[in-house]
View 1 (cartoon, rainbow, N blue to C red):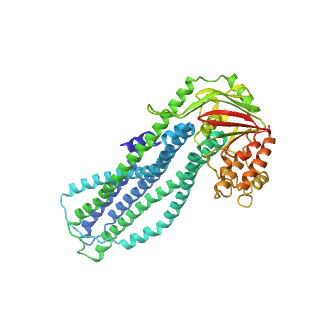
View 2: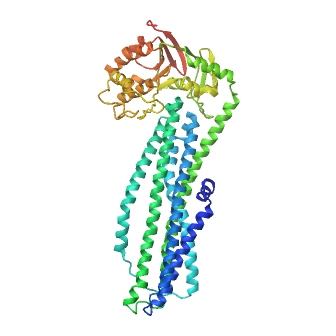
View 3: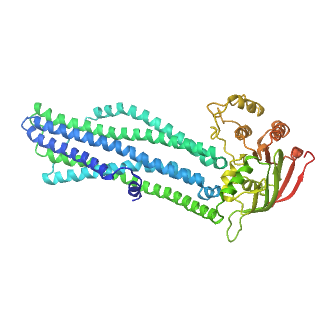
Length: 557
């Protein structure tokens, strides 16, 4: 069973210790049953044994101690195991290339980290509790064999008393559960940021590290709050059982004082037989959870192996291309420190195809993007503009040709170093509400940008985050541009940024915003169809069938 393999491989504790505590709780429970039946023999004569009462009290103390120790140990360990599983997948996603994540599927990864994790979370404590129930069944079965007779007795359960105790304690459990749900929602919100904003995370290592740090913190909080809830549920179960034992004690030690004919000889075996119903039912009821957990773990492992295999292939490809020397990297860092121009020289890229249908390819691409200049890239839908942008920004490694930074070639093992100098708002951008990777922002620095974007009456910066992102598509893009500008990168890439803007703000963008950014000395690259404002560009490249068929300077250059 995969659940057992998970426990063996991930647990920090000696499982024999946990099983021993669970077994001790089961033995103590069986001792309570035996003592009750022994006392019941004397109760037939109207005698209440204080010796048996003391023995029962000692057994109950042993049960409570073992149950509490095992519950706390198991609750913490289960959440630790899930925490480690999450972090393992987080790390593989962080290291993956964009095409790797596309192959595996964002939805599959998200499901593995949410739904499947929940299934495993529910099954793990059931498995460990099942050990206790099995030991209890074995002990009671042995006792029944020793008794060798069976009889029936009807015992009235004081359901109202037990239910009242349970409902009172449920208030605390519900409050803790709400806290756990809130923490999980925060965790899943950050996870959505990681997956939906993958390109933005990949383009900025500071944002990546900040986001992963936040995910780690949220995972820890979710682990701790859920550990509390699971421990409370386990203790609640113990308390309900304790209430039942108290009821039995009252019937055995108090009722006989007033009713001499209360018990007959069949009470012992009947009590023992009835005692087994609960553990057996618990074991049977938990079987579907084990089946579901195996399916869930298989899905999680499949995702993990797919990511691992893709990363191995990615590393093999990087190794085949060789590792850059320290001198080469130092020269590249020097060029990136003051980027004058970026050039594409015979750059090629192709998506994987099939035997029947080759993948879409772009190239050879030759182009130059200069500091303090605006470059427009135009072309029809499907011409390859976004693919060229992905190669230009380092999101996809070039299959041929070279990318030059100030005439310094860019090696494939330095793509992240290169990407860190780009700020982007791509066509499939994700708007982060929290400004990950950006130092604490002075609101005075943001206010002019919000005013320039004409959304200062709708949004403000609060605790290094936008106060809201619930805006129109065009306004959300303005927020994304503000976030990109706050990164203060030398290269700005905008893919169809103006397409969602109204006519008024589209003119503001081309006539005011872009010229102001040019004056700041940025390399500005825009994918656009707005031929009305082509004169705002210094250079225009037209794409057709994955190639630049025309590259010209405008009269404004």
